Image (cartoon, rainbow, N blue to C red; front, side):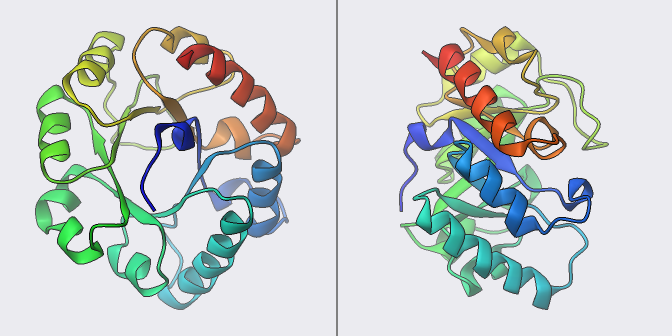
Length: 212
């Protein structure tokens, strides 16, 4: 499965912090019903066995919706359960040749914050870039801010699709218009909302406007 930039329009990243008694499967299904086009499973604290089980269930769900499914950081689990790909940070991409491990047909996303990092990631086989934080964010302590100018410069410097990430809400998304991105990656803008399906639908409309 290769990465089409249309797939990256509304890129949802899971976070069990917002479940409020629901299962991750339920909230992901709601977001897919609302039009999410790409899903990243992000688990920082789950043991391997449960992570694997959850990943397999969500992969099947995404398959029904024809939505690409990638795993955050954990290349081994992605290989084990045959995910569509992985999303890795700069250090992970440096640490080993992710592409060699995964093979030619999987999607590799890489986080980047500078033009240099972006160009290097593309050279090393990245299929798309997650660039940010484009707005101040509460979900990642070490996220450095990336200015609108840098975001635009990165989009111009690479030929692979770029997704904006970090602090993105329905309200501030229009500010990204003209930057060259092909989508936005969000966590709380979808999963922290009471009506996840509606939040996904509303965000999708705004993002379509921004990337058009």
